[in-house]
Length: 331
Image 1 (cartoon, rainbow, N blue to C red):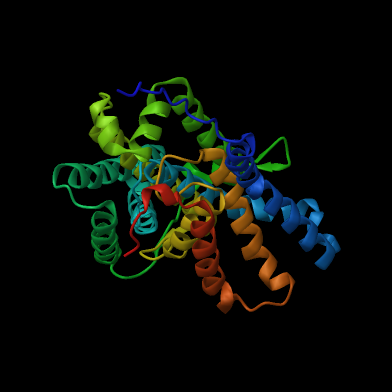
Image 2: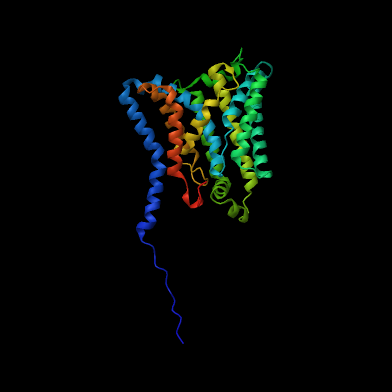
């Protein structure tokens, strides 16, 4: 009779473990590397780019995009996606322009609250009806766009008195646009709340493996609804920023921000499959996308190629950040 022999598992080589970790660290720094490279390239192409005037214009342009991307990042971290943020922002610009004469300063918080409620409704539909977030928000995008057209009469709604939102056009310390400072504050607040509460582990667990998160007692449904609610509120705040710049609201005013917002998230290194990424990376990604928008005319590339560039960026960034361990079959 043979004696059983205990087999000791062979330890994996250190290089096998350090390889993925090193790759993850490099990927984490990619948004900052791209940002620095873009600034250097634009400075070489136009020596006047690093002037206060140019940097201020970049900061003001980036502010609504930063806020939109910050809210949508939470949904992506949960493993979903929100395609309705731009349409919701456009509708919010119309509502704000219509309500400013009667509500005055209260119009801003009311519009943000309404946008948050709309986002929460989409989250509830996604959770209770078990419909993929892609389909829910795609339908929401169509509905919100149609409502914006109906409410606005398919035209621009002018703002006669912009005093309640004019503070966003002021400058902090005489140099920093208030809209940009507000965008940074929003990112910092959301990041701080997520980091200082169980939300960080809940969101990560939901994104990595929803079934395992449910077994571990994570309130997955509430986390998802909360993410949609925050995303909606950010869309409302982005609308306030747009109205303060354009002195009007329009049913398609923010529609051109959808692709840049998605590009900002994936360029920032947030995996489209969820579980991996951060708000600060999306901030860097939004700055990269904004610099690309500003830099195209500087290097002589027609603006018509902008959408082509965004599409290519999204495909490449998703390919680099996708968690292939979750995707066994590509359909």
